[in-house]
Length: 189
View 1 (cartoon, rainbow, N blue to C red):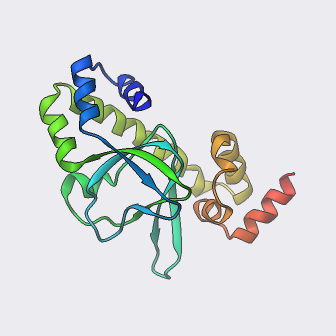
View 2 (tube, rainbow, N blue to C red; view 1 turned 30 degrees about the vertical axis):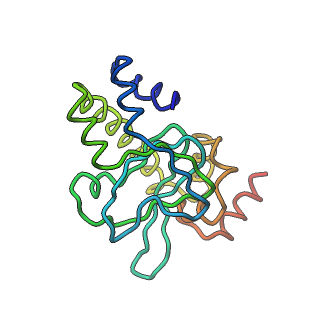
């Protein structure tokens, strides 16, 4: 819980009473490898903060191929924001790629925090803004660079992730086949 509180305090001030209130509104969730945090076609019902593990955001294209668009690791929030905020079915999946431990807030508890703590919305808005910037930074090189350059850039920017993510998920994220990624990795060594 201390990790979450320290993260929140980067974006705004909370007093002891407010911290205790946030803590009381949360629960711990263990996701096993391949469990879903949220699923396409269902309304997202919770916000999570990743304490341990990595999740991926993915969808299925028109050919039924699974496409990984994003990874969420420790010390980051995870939520399908559009689905959660607007109570509409999600268009993608959020899945654990390894056993994960999260702190979660139900929709009701999240809204209760927002209605109780003055300044909570400001903290949340700053976190969302940071997440959107990260998302853009992670995705934009994938459009214009060749596969080797994309892989090298991923290794440089996310060295803590590269050996923890299964190759087939990383290949999907980079937009290459697993065999192509294996060749790229072999040629780099």
